Length: 260
Length: 170
Figure 1 (spheres, each protein chain N blue to C red):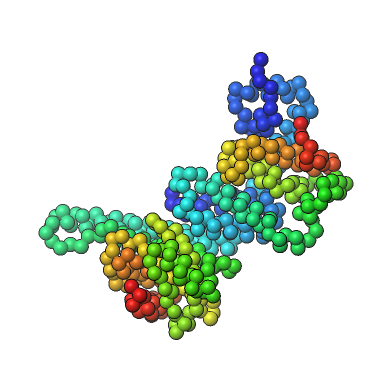
Figure 2: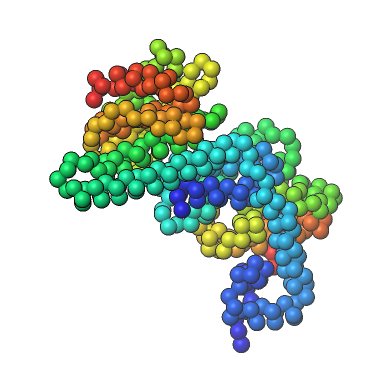
C-alpha cells in the first residue's frame, strides 16, 4: 500500500519532475479520478501554450540598448583572446631567451605586466557598459561631491580626489563603485557639452607596484590611456583619437600627482 | 567561459521571462536592462560555480517586486493591477463575464507571485528547488503558489468565475 498522492506530486507529474518511484501511484490515482486527470492535462497544455507563446522571444534580436553593450563586449573578448595569445607568445619567447642566454638582460613579461595588461581591459569594459546609460550613468552624482569623494576613498581604502577637467571641456557627472579583481575599483564619469563621455577608472590593486609611463590601448572605438603609480592603476577611456585622449590624460596625471 | 560571457548568454532567457511576466515589450526590456546592470555591479558577489541563471532570475525578481511596490503604479491606467487591488470578487466577476481566454490576458490576471513561480517552472523549466532558491522562498510556498496559479489560470482560460483567493484548491 503506497502513500496517498499529494497535490505537490500531481504538480510534479505535470512538469515531469515526479520521482520515478511515485509514477505508478500517481498514474493509478489519475485513472480513478478522471476530473483530476482532466485538470492536470489542462495544466500540461498551459505549459505547452506558454512555451509556444513566448519561446519566439529567444530568437528575437536583442534590442539596441543591450546589443550595444553586447557588441562592444564581443569585440573586447576578441581583443582579449588576441592579447592573451600575444602575451603567452611573449612569455614563451622571453622564457626561451632567458633559458638560452640566462645572463643576458632580457626583460621578460612578468606578473606586473600581466596585471597592467588587465587594467585597460577592465576599464574599457566598464566604459562600454556604463557610458550609454541615460537614466543612471553614475551611483553618486557630482552634486554630492563631498559624499562621492568620502565614499569612494573609504571603499578604495585610499584617498581619491576627482580631477577637474572643466578647462578641457569636461564636467564631472559622478562616480560609481565596481568589482575589481580582488576588491572595489572606482569609475568617475565626465561629460562634455555635446554629451560625449569620458571615464576614469581607478584601481588600487596593483600589488606588483611598479610605475609605468603612459600606455595606450584601443578597444573597438574606445581608446584607453593607462598608467600605474604605486598601488594605483589609472585608466582614462573615451571614444577619442590618441592625441586628444593623451592631452586629457596629461591633465589628469598632473592633478593626481600632488595628491599621491 | 568568462563570467561576462555567461551573463550575456542568459539575456535571451531573461527577456523571454520578463516578457511573459510583464506582458509588454518596452517594460520587459527595461527590466532586463536593470537586471543586467545590477548583475554587472554584483558580479563579484556571485559565487563562482553557482548557477548564474538562477542568480540573475533572483535579481530580476527582486527588481520586479521593488517596481511593483513603487507608488508610481497607482497612477497607471485602470487595468488588471487595479482590479487586483479591488476587494475580493469585484474584479474577478468582471473577468468571468469577459471570459478571457487569451493566454496573455489570463497571465496578467494572476497574482504576481503566482505568475512568477508558474513562469519559472513552465517557461524556464526550473526544478522546484531551483525556483525556491531563485525567489528565496520555501519549497512549500513554491508548490502552493504553483498549484493556485495553475488553477486560477485554468479557470480564466475556460472563462469560469474565479474562486476566492482564500479558498483552498483541492
